[in-house]
Length: 242
Image (cartoon, rainbow, N blue to C red; front, side, top):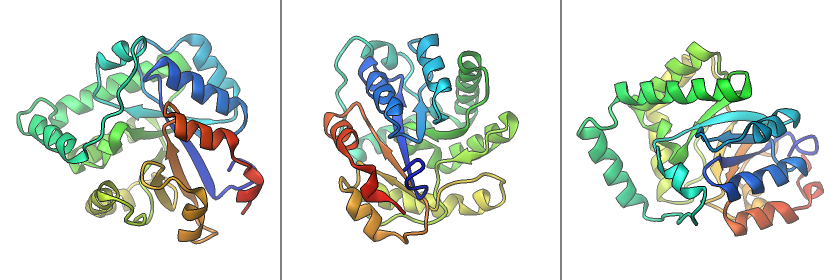
């Protein structure tokens, strides 16, 4: 974590999805407990918030999404963090089959989000990821690679190796990763050795014990969730020295 453990990369997801998420992320950024911030572009990110991130030492990534007006609603309303990966997956594939979220439409929308990022931060994103890992969907992965090349983005949340099979979601992502591996290897993009979501495992010690000590591990947390915020807020970084 940061200077004390370069093998653990803490990524804070969903900056901009709600006022609470942005507030919690900024607090832990200022405490030096976050390495990368995943920004969801919307009109609700203020110039002062952007400057606060720029003044910190964190990497500022774009967190691509398909949420549109939901981000506006969640600024003033409590956000229900939905479960049910199977139902969300079926809905996602249905929209794609109907052409609502076609590759062409997604590339156009995500290019718009990157342009909005550049307008507020004054530079291209340091890296790229997506809400609910939808950039792992092979047609979208191709879009992301194209956009990375166009905007000079060099880092992607992907993982050089499969993560442990913690859950149905991690198993699906491992399968999708294998589908995209050839394209990734042909690119000049960098990534961590392993990509892990705190949704899958809520124990840092378990994460460290399951992977080689000299490997880099990007661990994503949703600091809008009280439990995940409290864990990172209270953590003693000295316990996780490489």
